[in-house]
Image 1: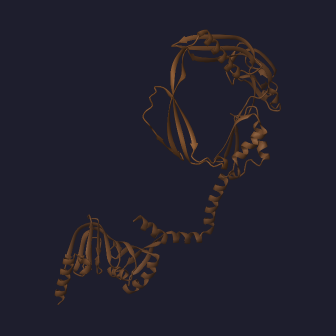
Image 2 (image 1 turned 60 degrees about the vertical axis):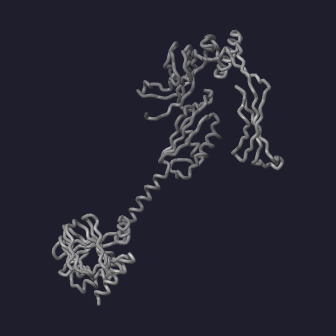
Image 3 (image 1 turned 180 degrees about the horizontal axis):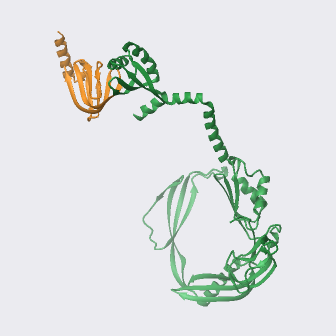
Length: 92
Length: 400
């Protein structure tokens, strides 16, 4: 049942060219070079160290790996991470 | 970004250290409580450093209770904290304001009055005159009216040819230029030199007071001291200044040159004219042109006439009709008689010298030279005269 609703939402946003992240409530990751990453629509931080940041989202966990990572801003809908980013994984 | 930083500075923020094991939870909870945190840094395994607004920091206390960690303030940054500190140190803040107030006040006073260019009028006299008119040291410079100073000086000294008043910083500078005064008019209470008014060769020296420093036959240029008012005093081994007086006669030279072409172009009207009309509205005009002007040489005359004549009402009506008239001119070369031209040149040159020469001089010699060069007659007239070239100059007791 849930899968069917998702499919309908997906086809609506596809056919009407509406932004998917809003219709389907998906996280949106923006990268500026390897220096800054901003993740919108997150569901909280799971782990934060200088090398690893794990952020929970609706579709799974975003894992950002790098050096000297710091959280520039944390708001209820957006997190901005700065530092030297080396790898980004999505664990669903 | 800079705008946000400045905004944060004005609002004030704190750098806090949070110590605990479940720090991620703290971050999530504060995000959920709409507490704005930024620049979160992990300084060690169990310590986070972050910035928070003062308002956010108060709200954070509840979150901290839930999570169970320790919060300490590392640094307080921003204007509100600075103001708070200044409130604690009232005298310091007062001193700071007083310091600037004194600086501004002192720099808006006149501290020095300088008078430049006075040779016959003593500086002390001018300064005391200004003092009588409420212009003296220690007065606010915004109260001083430069035009007023000029008026005062002009009223009291009718022989000043130039006055300039400038205020630069805390110094009031008055620069004047004097016309030559008859020697009797210079105040005898002040010591003075007698200096040369113009270039010349000394022929006769009659010092009445003071010591002559030039002898007969010397060439002196303008401004040279002829009779000094500074005498060495043998008794005290020092100097004393006196009011020098005397007459110094010298041969001076006046010369003038007049150039005049021998062949002269004379213009004559032939009587042919062309008339064009135009309209002028305000300052912009339109000219109705009919063909080009067929004359080689012509003169243009312009006449304006208002469409409606309102001169009786004293109104200048802005729309005008302009008549342009072109009159043909014929150029004729006229060869002038050289002897006649020499004579007229000589008269012209003599007139020029007469204007320059003071009235009481003895003319020694006259010398006229004519020269024809490229069709131009050059006449040079040199007059040598004997006159008194002395002029009094007050000795300023300056160190320099």
